[in-house]
Amino acid sequence: AIPLVIAISTAMSARAGILVKDRLALERMRQVDAVLFDKTGTLTMGRPAVSGVAAAGPVSEDELLALAAAAERDSEHPLAKAVVAAASGPVPVATEFRSLTGKGVRAVVDGAQVSVGGPGLLRDLSLAAPSSIASSVDEWAAAGSTVLYVVRDGDVLGALALADEIRPESREAVALLRAEKVHTVMITGDARNVAESVAAKVGIDEVFAEVLPEDKDAAVASLQQRGLSVAMVGDGVNDAPALARADVGVAIGAGTDVAVESAGVVLASDDPRGVVSARRLSTASYRKMV
Ligand code: ADP
Ligand code: MG
Image (cartoon, rainbow, N blue to C red; front, side, top):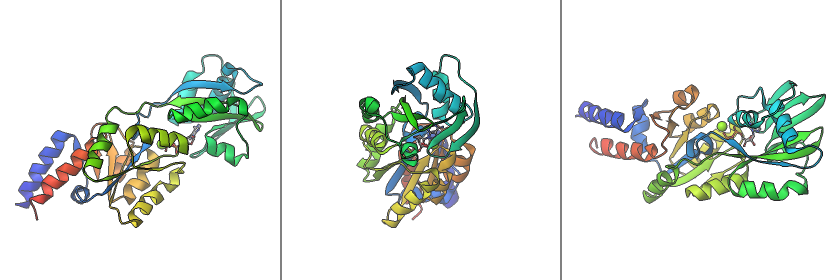
């Protein structure tokens, strides 16, 4: 009877757009009592766009954008691509580009050190945002937009808001899980206030924010230490160790190859409700076998 059940569940899963790479992972899915979602690209579209510019003083908004774009030009990060796309005028040439993983970028522009990054970058540089841009920054973060600061030779020149749309299906996916008594958690490298805003909009129970890429798997482990069986849902390169650590790793949609490799279950579409379908498929398939 087992091969028949497996054949049926495989057909069911294919129809639902659920690719089962590791059958044991699918079997464990029905016992999962916490789902940890990556924020960017999983609960959100992962296509940020510059939605606000606040210059603090010595430079204009256009100059601020041009400087930021110069420093971001060699970065592969979606935030960097959004900044480069938003600069309409000429962009100065940057040299000595360096990526500060989970924090931002740094480069030399016109002989000056220019850094672009989130609040973690400012903390590392022991700098504070000037009060003239504080209200813009607070407003953006409260609305769930990522805030990037632009620093030149120790001066915070201003900040940019980057908005990333929440997927229309995210709220329902979370509501369905909570209705099935599953604890819902979100993880992100983004700032705490931004993360809390997105989590509130989606209905998430718990938030891990300002997590460096290399610490994402430790967050999975901390949930497991609380006795929870964890499914992690992510799409990015830096989600791979967390996907591997989770009781069930779920790669979403057109995730990166690394994420897909590390996952036991792959959702063919970008729809986070696929996690709910996978859990139901697991319950339906394995109930018959015991
Ligand atoms: P996520 O968890 O959303 O995938 P990342 O770990 O990729 O986040 O990045 C975390 C934070 O680091 C971002 O919210 C941003 O503040 C900063 N950051 C990362 N890469 C860049 C970059 N190229 N330019 C500016 N800031 C960046
Ligand atoms: Mg990422």
